[in-house]
Length: 325
Image (cartoon, rainbow, N blue to C red; front, side, top):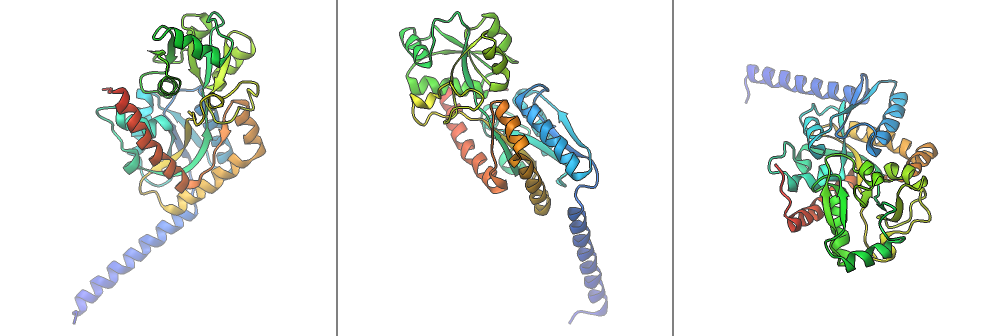
């Protein structure tokens, strides 16, 4: 039988533990009671920046708190994502996780300061993006099939711009090589190649719709195909690659992730509030105008998607033998 001192110690510890749990629950229920930071591992002016700021502003209005969008670009999104991984798991710091940062980078970089499968918990998906296959008018093709025919007749002679080795545009180009049995050659840029494409310094690129649309509409570049399974509302007359090569799809996604250990009731609250915004007619119109599509999977669905694409990206990267420092 425990002596009186043991009973007192046990009772005190139990009381303190219960008090801690109560305080944790209260803190979660009152979330957020101060500003929330969303780390965006890409620069301003990008599609992810536009959508993140749109949602962040409306979350701030809903919560009555400031939502700070903190751009931390570099190393294909690794710098900002690594910083988020080290943040306190309390819901006050999230990261906009992108297909490349959460599924590709772990297989590309020799030393990566985060592990997406261990360091993060999925909060909510936001968007499924796309690439538009665009050419400079001087390239003698007027259709996607024409591009394939030209590439088949001149293997290795056509270059395409990428946003860097192992970027989404690079992997999409290599997917097309595989599906169409062609050989177009990547030219890696450290930033957007759109100005070089418009200027005719490079003749082919895989571009996000929001960057390509103004130049397509002005006739400075030509849109040949989109990489989603369905045609984009913003480009209804541009066919999909899958209309010729069924099952071809390159639709980079992104969503919010929080550091592992963030309380589930906070995750659920953020997910619920974000999904309400993404479902809104206002958000739908905004996304479609940028050539993007709303994507809502919930925390479990986003986690499943990340893990599936993690394995797919592993095979792609290994096949291409891409290794970065």
